[in-house]
View 1 (cartoon, rainbow, N blue to C red):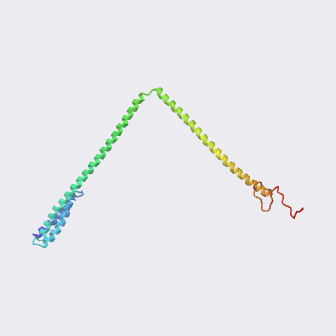
View 2: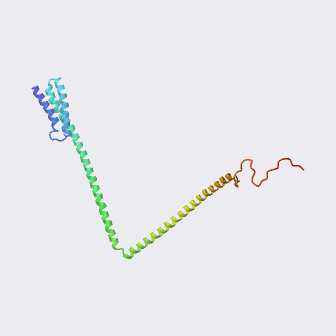
View 3: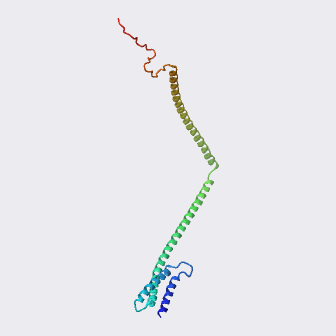
Length: 214
């Protein structure tokens, strides 16, 4: 009898574990919880039964049944939570898709309305008004071109003046350097240049040596 109960308990545990795998899809939390509860309950029931008058087989069957029941309830609650979360996400996606579609339709309707208004306004524009607008545009473009030309010419003059002044300064500095160099090589004195030590300035008579008296 105990052997039959033990075999029945083992079959119950195997059935609880494999019940979610027969369809080829992932088992639900209810089936998974029932299987896990059955295994834990069976192990605990077998231990308790072996230490009591029930026997290991009876304890295994009772533990497996109780474990499967409790595990199934826990898994069922988790499944319900998962379904609520999936429903919420599905509703959120549907809302966002509907919102995007509505905004796209509004933008399309607005563009169509603006195009219709532009067409209606175009019918009210006369050739005289259009030609006058073109004439004003040409006049404004010519004036802008003239002002830009004046501005560029003024900038060019300023640049040319700055370049000329800079080149004049550099040229005069080079002239002064060459004059001093050539005068030094010729032994001449350049006006404004420092004299060598002991050499009298041009046009100055050195004092006569010796004593002068009455």
